[in-house]
Image 1 (cartoon, rainbow, N blue to C red):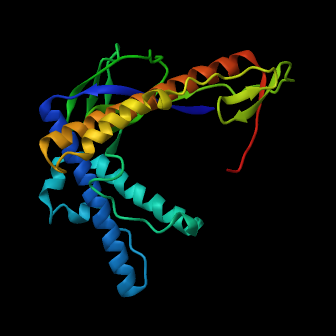
Image 2 (cartoon, rainbow, N blue to C red):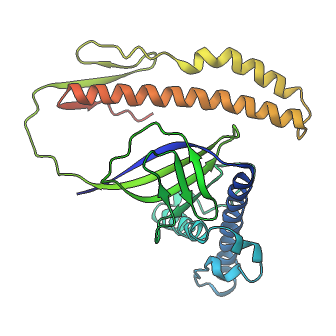
Image 3 (cartoon, rainbow, N blue to C red):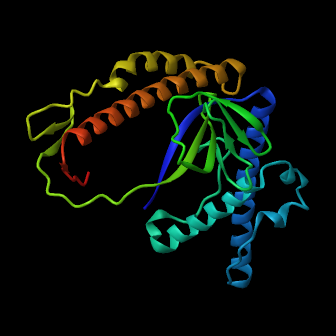
Amino acid sequence: MRTHTAVRFRAYPTEEQARQVNRTIGCVRFVYNLMLETRIAHYQTTWESCYPTPALYKDTYPFLREVDSFALCNAQLALEKAYKRFFEDRKTGFPKYKSKRRGRKTYTTNLSHGNIELDDKARRLKLPKLGWLAVRQHKRIPDDWKLKSVTVEHCPSGRYTATILFEYETQIPEKVKPVKTVGLDYASHGLYVSSDGEHAEYPGYYRKMQDKLAREQCKLSHMVKGSANWRKQCKRVARLYEKTANQRRDYQHKKANRIVASYDMVGVEALSM
């Protein structure tokens, strides 16, 4: 059985690499909006569907040839998925144009003929149009894991990350009769309470950071929007939010791994909030 796992690395691009990443993200957003505009205009004119590709716009906009072609192809696939979700469930809404100031700034590239490589020590990552990119190692990658794709993100805090998708073979688990079972009941002030009487004792990272966030947001509200100091303060606020999210994610992963290693079956309360 094939299983996929994504590993997130902190990336440290040079100034030229950072400009190329930002240029690729902008081109991906630009092509997505162009294809959406073309599909809407064609349907309103002929009442028929069309499926434009990024190659349709490269002659009109030559700068699209300067970025990774796989990133543009993934933008086309993202638009197809958006249309598919809309037709399957109208509540998701019609596909919208991507905004420069809102949403995640990412692009995805795929492995093809060795264009992506991760060195043995997981300290460098080779990407198309970027070359070798320095990354921080925090997880040993097994030798039997196969690299499939990489998603590069420019975070609001100014940092860059590279999320690598791996594929590997694993055995189908055999059905066994559970011996140790536990039930988890939702608790608004402590994440959960187990059937054994154990409380999660969630540290409340956001509450601890709330006063500092309030001070930094107060400073931001008194600055001129668009100024250099305003941009610097936006990054400070974003880094506080990013730190809180990382702390919460780390706590949840460690707690989940401990529960899975201790019990054979875990029952979780399902709530419709």
